[in-house]
Image: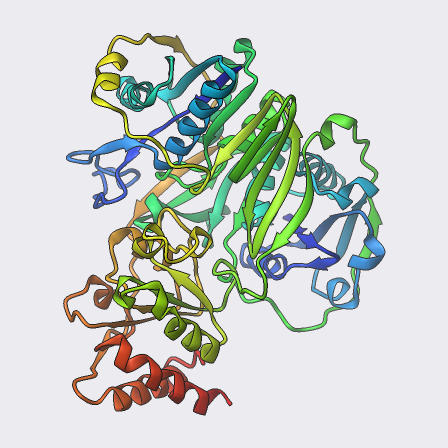
Length: 321
Length: 250
């Protein structure tokens, strides 16, 4: 089985979920794993760590117009690389870009597609992909019935290898784009200053209504800093205008799977649990011993966040420094 | 301006999911279905654009007669008419195909939808329609500006936002934050009852994916609960120790 992994590049860097996708490819028993990079400047992207990441070949589609990324053009590029590499399976990391790109590749390859896969299994030669549905309240096990198959894999669930493998060979794929392919273009990326995004963080500290008001958010921020974590917010807190929607975790916010999820003053409404239930370790701190969040956590403290948090921040500093 | 809004009819966010006897679907008994929350942002944006530029807003959905309720909700918010594409939603691609077939002859200037429907959470329909209709698209949109044929969309991405430029006609998939959806007023709910919903037959190729089974996620949690009771410091110290030595996550 030939598997092609999409290496997502942003500002010359191949992003971590791409390397995780290699491990996902290994888990379905690939005979050959290659990668595709779509870029305006391959010389900047093809670093040692990219070349030694464990794929045997890297297909490069290079066009100066990708300085302004276009999802349509990228979809065409990856589909062409899939044909060139004779790929049976294409795996795209389920990032903001990836989730938009993968369905396009599937349409172009006339392939079935399973989005946001959280695990793979192989049974009687069939690839079974698990995709959380109904906001994580259920898992669907899905089989793609077409000869070509496309999947996107949820970030943070496979561990990228740190090993350095033999150099991949590099092959350019020429794709003839027309103007229409670039009718949509990403002109600019505006990064939120100095903030770790909840969707990508390894550790997340989320605050809920138990914090009583936006003026107390420094408790969450201090704890997050001690953990080296991103800060998240519950829906109640976002709806109340204390925090921006980009920080919201849950069914109408972001779905996250960090190594450690710490919920402070979050009751654990079903909409919230849906967004974080695949986290590896869950910690809850809440005054209310009957809060539903305690039913799904690994560790909990029943107590007042205002009393516990300063101590927790201090204790963490002892361990982490 | 002719604006099409794709809407879907989904279980309410507070729904407790029970699995159907076949183990491949949810049991819809007693489940309250609503207009997909993200579609509300799409409908609202369409209505705002119509109020500004004039034109027509058409709400379209794929499914059985029950999907009419989602269309009716869009009509109650202010859409002008509805189209129900009657067909079997065997997978996302079949839905995209039926939508594409129904939308193509309409000559829309703008096609709006929610960024995902909260049942299968796939975020597939927008990009698939973009390919099938050969139109530019932007997904997860939290800001939209239209000036003549020039469209600027803000897309939420990890760690920030992307500014995407595209041109009409195009497809926009809305994210929370784009606007504040209006509540349908009682007179508008009454009026919506007499607005037309056209029915067309949809057909799609055989499905490309198959649900083998559906089950409830079960992850065993340690569930060690400490009590702060008058000594928050020792509880905090104990928690840090557990995270460090037992869970080994810090």
